[in-house]
Image 1 (cartoon, rainbow, N blue to C red):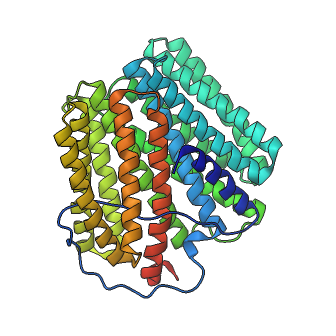
Image 2 (image 1 turned 60 degrees about the vertical axis):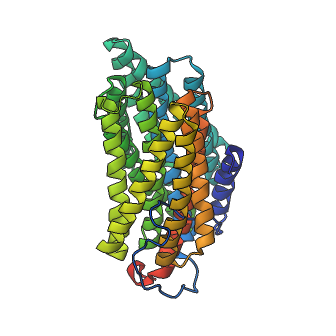
Image 3 (image 1 turned 30 degrees about the horizontal axis):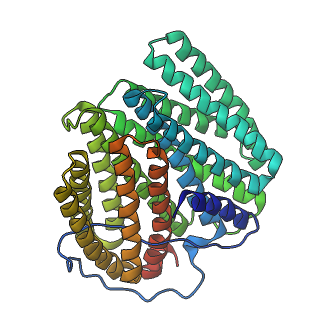
Length: 417
């Protein structure tokens, strides 16, 4: 899926939601080992009623989760690029462009629900707060406390003005919106501070800032659903599953990208504190995905998932090392291993969800190709680093939609279906 198609998807999906209709999605998620390795599971007959993961409310919640997570992750990527390559480098300019595209997608979504005037006001306020985060970053990087304080004062003003705007549109209590916005500001400030300081906590701080946006997405979705009369329940078990998978899978790409960015910035030193911290954050994301699978299918499935998922991360590490050291044989071996992962993991997922193995495999190949493209761009420090990361993250939102649908259809008793 190219970037322009993602932009169109975001806008069209929001228009469909505003009209109270149901849209569509893409396919599943992955890893390698033996092509026939999987935990035996007893498939359940597919449900015949409407898909509860794809109600207009569930679509809205997942779409906001994706876009808001990407906002936090892309902001972190801009800061990391600026620290590593300079504020005017092609990589930093490209990262800023990708963050701008995410802003446009959010504006299009808001405008499709509340009209062009609301879209214009949203974009004015949202772009301003990004500028304040830039000022905060520059103040930290240049050790100018006065500039940091001014940026924080501006961000406090943004909390006031944006909470008033959102409350007016959604009828959510202004105080609740303001409290959530203060959480966004504080968690992203912590992430920026850690990145600028090349701290071992940078990876976990980025993860925390991104995870905060899950709650923001839920609150906003509930307000919008109520104010616009959109059908479905934001917090139904099926909707919550789709959003949770969206957040975790988007974060998998973001965390992988940050590992590669920090490793390149530190000259390939995997023992550098920031790199080790980034690897730890990626491992946490893996454990959270495993726990999600285990909560549905049991401990044996969780163990098998983790074996496969960790293996595929290892293959991406080998791919990155091969690209960075210009060793074509290492790259080719990693790609062969990733092909094996497609076979083994698609069999595992198909057995659990009754999704067609061929469709799962096709989606996994999309995950591999988009993440390889992002890794290539990061290693080369190209200007399209941000856009390739955004494409790889967007792919995972479609993966989450279909994976959630397959899980709920296979195990309806766990989701009130």
